[in-house]
Length: 180
Image 1: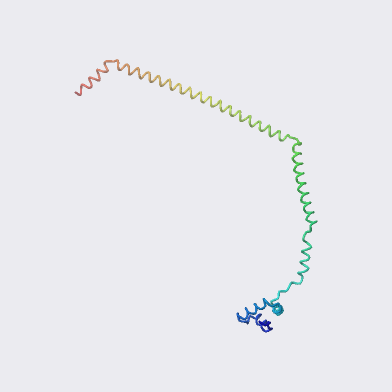
Image 2: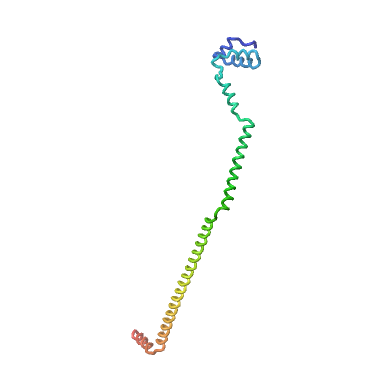
């Protein structure tokens, strides 16, 4: 194919070429550098992207703001210093608490002792109350058992008397004889 003409370039940008012609033109431009340059040069200004005016200076200013190696090292050392100071303060607090007046801790310990003493006293009184209740219960049970034994003894004596008395048998026989 021969080189493309100015008219073909205009028609291409206006989208007036037929599909087959457009495909042939693009294949030729892909292989021929001269025509590719011509096609690019013929691009209308409305389709070319323009760079905003202050873009270059803005990019350079932002590049200056990117921290360098020394600045990153300074930030790292500052961070390490802060961490070390924090650890020293925590250690100092722990040590100072041990050397302070331990009266508060002694009060807590005395309260703990008082609470344990009270709980043991309550347990003792509860166990003595329980023992007294148990003893009372056992007394009541023994009284009931004695009463029961006494009733049983009386009943057995009564039955024994009824068996030994001949009159009572005879009375029953007389009674049965009435129905014969």
